[in-house]
Image (cartoon, rainbow, N blue to C red):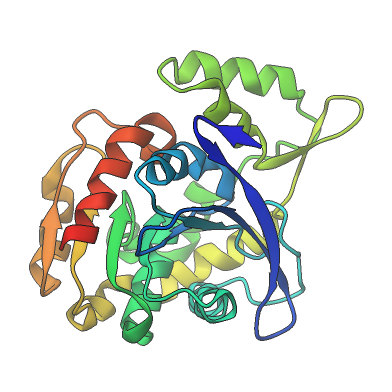
Length: 277
C-alpha cells in the first residue's frame, strides 16, 4: 500500500510468549528509525500519514499493532501496560532496531513510558502524543466510577457506512486515509456490519492496568530526551514535564486526541526534532 511517497509493508513478529504482532513498516536509509505505537482499541494504520512524512525525510518507521489490536494475534492474556511494554522490547530486539525514536499516542504513550523506563538502552528519544501521562486515579474517585465512564460502547452490528459518516462529520479536517484507518479499529463483515477486534473484556483489563499503575512513577527514570505533545492546554502536562529530567512541551491548540490522524505532517516534523536532539 502507498501513501504519498511511502510504500508500506508488514511483518509478523513473534514476541516472548509466542504471540505474533503485526508491524507495519516503511523503508529509509537515514538513522534512526521510528517505532510508532497506537492507543487503546486503535491500530497501526493511524500512523500512516506520519510514517509517510518520516519516509519522505529518509527515515524508516515501524508501527506496531499491539496484541488484540489491528492484525495482531488475540491471545487469552497479557492485556496490560507492562506486558505491552515488554512486547515492544521484543519487537525492537527481533527487528534489530538500533535505539529508535519511540512515539506513543494515548494509552500507547503510557506503554512507551514504561518501555523507556525499564529498557532505557533501547530508546534514543521519546515522544508522547496526547498520552503518556494518563493518570486515571487522579481523574476518578473509584475504579467502578472509572469503569462505568470509560467502558466502550457496544458497536457490534453497527453499519460501517454509518460510522464512516459520523467520522467524516466529526473530523472534517481528516484525510480519507485517516478515516479508513479508524474504521480498521473494527472488522467489517460481508454484510457491511461491524464487530470489535479487541473484546470488551480485554479492553477493560487494559483500563484496569492503567488504573492500577499510573505512569508517573516512571517519569524520573526517563533519562533520554522526551517530547510531550498534548492536544489543547499545555497546563495539562505541567506536572509530568516537571518530573521528567529532559522534557520539552509542544502543545497543539485545538488539536484532536488523535493528533497523528489529524495533523500528521506537523507531528512528523516535531518527531524529527528528536533526531537532532
